[in-house]
Length: 147
Ligand SMILES: [Zn+2]
Image 1 (spheres, helix red, strand yellow):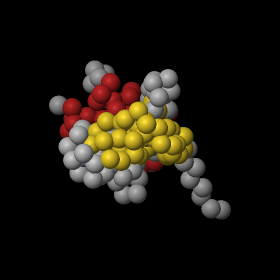
Image 2 (cartoon, helix red, strand yellow):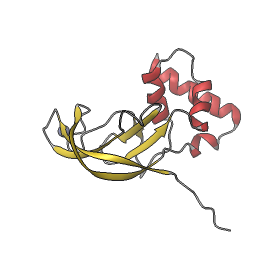
Image 3 (cartoon, helix red, strand yellow):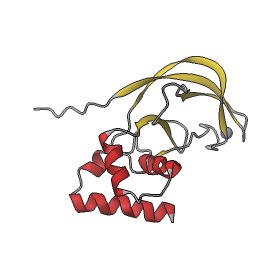
Image 4 (tube, protein in one colour):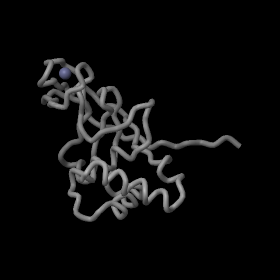
């Protein structure tokens, strides 16, 4: 039997965006204020790949309960991005990067140009580890990034 890997996708609005460093114009997916509670869009450091994450998914919750309690909302996102599976060989970050110069000083403009279907982040690498290794991996990530 073939193993089917079902990756959820989400339709998100795409806006014109501009890089504050190199002034490159590009297109960037953005969640509306109404739909964005507990939801994030991550991007690869080269700004070429986007993924969607949800703070209340089972994997996110697992990561949350292992992480130290007081790391804060921003660091929680950093961990959700950093612990996710690579997509097309790229690790994810919780910032949006310019696809031209990779700077994070990007901002979406008001002009909506369409919709993209972007994949939800997966944690199959993390989930496939043994229990103790999952805990150690998440705690090591916290130690390396938040202290
Ligand atoms: Zn740029």
